[in-house]
Figure 1 (cartoon, rainbow, N blue to C red):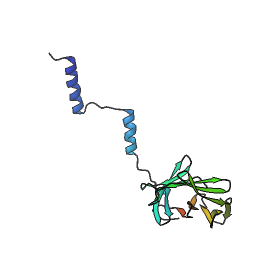
Figure 2: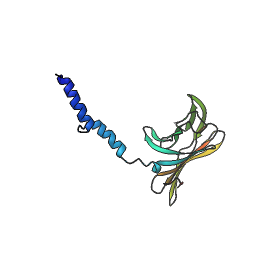
Figure 3: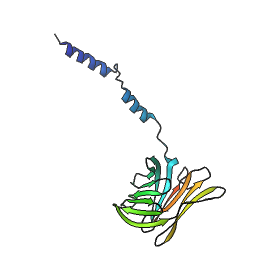
Figure 4: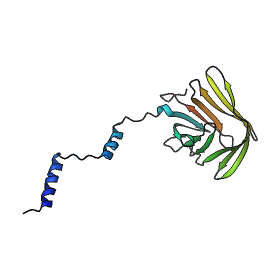
Length: 182
């Protein structure tokens, strides 16, 4: 005579193999819903990045300290709403740079070492019919201007700022759907 355990195991095995038993889990169901959802269209958050001789497409993501622009190549730029606050791993330029403001002084910091201090004036707002331009004049050994353009719909369309001690400009340009610049 077979034991109850052996009989139960055989019956459950046969039911499982015949497809009569359905195993359900709320966690499994939630996981499966993720795969059933259409993929997220990130083209609406696409930006064209230009830094020195490097060009790439990056995607804007809301982050704790501002907007993070990044891509699968590892490029990253953190924008705090007024200035590019950090860059790193852009193209062949693999060292991170932090940009800190204190009063009218903008410091360019790499590996906790200040490489340069520039004097920057407050931002100035200029408006015309279709666009608002914010500009900021800075100087050290050279005079330059940082700028942010805001389209008539209130969204930033271009960010151009000096991001290192060599006066290298980094430009982010909002792309339209399909990969074209606005």
